[in-house]
Image (cartoon, rainbow, N blue to C red; front, side, top):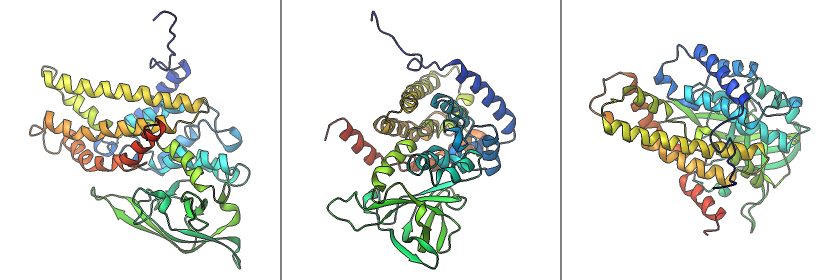
Length: 386
């Protein structure tokens, strides 16, 4: 169309500094991950290695967009996107710092800029402080507004603060986290079911806090149940304003749903299928070509979210769309692999191991970060369809 201008980002091209950074990251990963087999890379951003996280911190690849006064590096959201994309494509073990870098650091800088952030956030940027998120609770399902864990203001021998009692469940990485950001009730439920909630920074070594493992169907320990039994939290660990927890969580979840991890979690299986594909088999060409095209579309959508973040816009609706559609592609990957290669895969081969792992892992992809039903409700509401 005459006069139509397409931005380079919309066309898939990134600025030169981004592509130079991509080459730097690839060179680093080629050496750092030379001995990590595909079967371990399948864990993608769920795999955790604190030593690897510290290496990334030394290179300035954590907290990339954050202000320098918080230990950040004031680089662009698109540069950060390139690092995330390369780490995910390589199956790098970034899980230790992932939550802190993605959402906990930005939350503290926004809602506790002069109290908690100066003390905690620089440690995140160095790859030394790991976080977990205390949102979900037993018997609450996807209804986050129904949480019952409670914090009561109290002054006693421990000082001025809050005492928390209750339980959180499905808490990823709680067993290796230094801190939790917990959403709890500080007031009773009134007419506004989203009111009366607040967020606290909780030191995971606090007396009365117990972490119990939940082993998933892969036999791995990533999830946990966390019990609060009169856990004392200092008053200064209140994040933001009392009673504003629901609004703060909304901003936090936008970060959680906005990255390329929401469609690249099955990328190792795709790479193995491409390596094993028969160039003379049209079924392979058509089926895998379709998946690659879907990846390309999702990447464009995800880059659009990164662009929104770089402009300071709210990406909540766009991020929900990427997360919903990305999960569909990710979860379809094992069925595709079985259809194309089932019965012809050598037992114990990298393709076999990757297929087995991904088949057991994909059911969780439409649960974490918000269930499909919750996301589609958000999308419908955002589009004025309900």
